Image 1 (cartoon, rainbow, N blue to C red):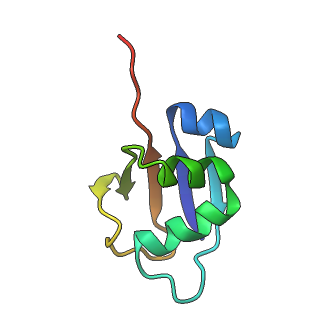
Image 2: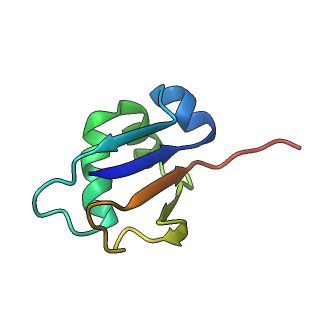
Length: 84
Protein backbone atom coordinates (compact mmCIF):
# COMPACT_ATOMS: atom_id res chain seq x y z
CA UNK A 1 0.00 0.00 0.00
CA UNK A 2 1.01 3.60 -0.52
CA UNK A 3 -0.41 6.71 1.13
CA UNK A 4 -1.54 9.46 -1.23
CA UNK A 5 -2.17 13.00 0.02
CA UNK A 6 -4.09 15.56 -2.05
CA UNK A 7 -3.82 19.30 -1.42
CA UNK A 8 -5.66 22.56 -2.20
CA UNK A 9 -8.30 22.58 -4.93
CA UNK A 10 -7.35 19.10 -6.09
CA UNK A 11 -8.39 17.71 -2.69
CA UNK A 12 -11.76 19.42 -3.10
CA UNK A 13 -12.33 18.17 -6.65
CA UNK A 14 -11.37 14.58 -5.81
CA UNK A 15 -13.27 14.69 -2.53
CA UNK A 16 -10.43 13.16 -0.53
CA UNK A 17 -7.56 14.57 1.47
CA UNK A 18 -5.90 11.19 1.83
CA UNK A 19 -6.23 7.65 0.59
CA UNK A 20 -4.34 4.40 0.75
CA UNK A 21 -4.03 2.53 -2.51
CA UNK A 22 -2.32 -0.72 -3.42
CA UNK A 23 0.89 -0.47 -5.37
CA UNK A 24 0.09 -2.15 -8.67
CA UNK A 25 2.29 -5.07 -9.64
CA UNK A 26 5.12 -3.78 -11.79
CA UNK A 27 4.74 -0.17 -10.62
CA UNK A 28 8.22 1.12 -9.87
CA UNK A 29 8.04 4.87 -10.46
CA UNK A 30 5.91 7.82 -9.52
CA UNK A 31 4.71 7.94 -13.15
CA UNK A 32 3.36 4.39 -12.78
CA UNK A 33 1.45 5.35 -9.63
CA UNK A 34 0.13 8.52 -11.25
CA UNK A 35 -1.21 6.49 -14.18
CA UNK A 36 -3.21 4.35 -11.72
CA UNK A 37 -4.42 7.42 -9.81
CA UNK A 38 -5.48 9.14 -13.02
CA UNK A 39 -7.65 6.13 -13.84
CA UNK A 40 -9.26 6.39 -10.37
CA UNK A 41 -9.88 10.14 -10.35
CA UNK A 42 -11.12 12.12 -13.34
CA UNK A 43 -10.20 15.41 -11.63
CA UNK A 44 -6.55 14.36 -11.33
CA UNK A 45 -6.54 13.12 -14.88
CA UNK A 46 -7.98 16.44 -16.09
CA UNK A 47 -5.45 18.47 -14.07
CA UNK A 48 -2.50 16.54 -15.44
CA UNK A 49 -3.90 16.45 -18.98
CA UNK A 50 -4.39 20.21 -18.98
CA UNK A 51 -0.70 20.74 -18.28
CA UNK A 52 -1.37 22.26 -14.87
CA UNK A 53 1.86 22.80 -12.95
CA UNK A 54 1.21 20.03 -10.43
CA UNK A 55 4.11 19.15 -8.12
CA UNK A 56 4.75 15.83 -6.44
CA UNK A 57 6.61 14.62 -3.39
CA UNK A 58 7.66 11.11 -2.45
CA UNK A 59 8.30 10.67 1.26
CA UNK A 60 8.24 14.45 1.79
CA UNK A 61 10.83 15.25 -0.88
CA UNK A 62 9.86 16.89 -4.14
CA UNK A 63 10.10 14.34 -6.92
CA UNK A 64 9.90 13.98 -10.68
CA UNK A 65 7.77 11.31 -12.39
CA UNK A 66 10.80 9.03 -12.79
CA UNK A 67 11.31 8.82 -8.99
CA UNK A 68 11.30 5.31 -7.55
CA UNK A 69 8.38 4.28 -5.34
CA UNK A 70 7.84 1.29 -3.09
CA UNK A 71 5.16 -0.10 -0.86
CA UNK A 72 4.82 2.02 2.28
CA UNK A 73 5.80 5.27 0.55
CA UNK A 74 3.88 8.51 0.91
CA UNK A 75 3.04 10.48 -2.23
CA UNK A 76 1.79 14.05 -2.02
CA UNK A 77 0.20 15.90 -4.92
CA UNK A 78 0.25 19.70 -4.92
CA UNK A 79 -1.64 21.70 -7.55
CA UNK A 80 -0.74 25.35 -8.04
CA UNK A 81 -2.47 27.72 -5.63
CA UNK A 82 -3.05 31.44 -5.60
CA UNK A 83 -4.01 33.85 -2.94
CA UNK A 84 -2.48 36.12 -0.44
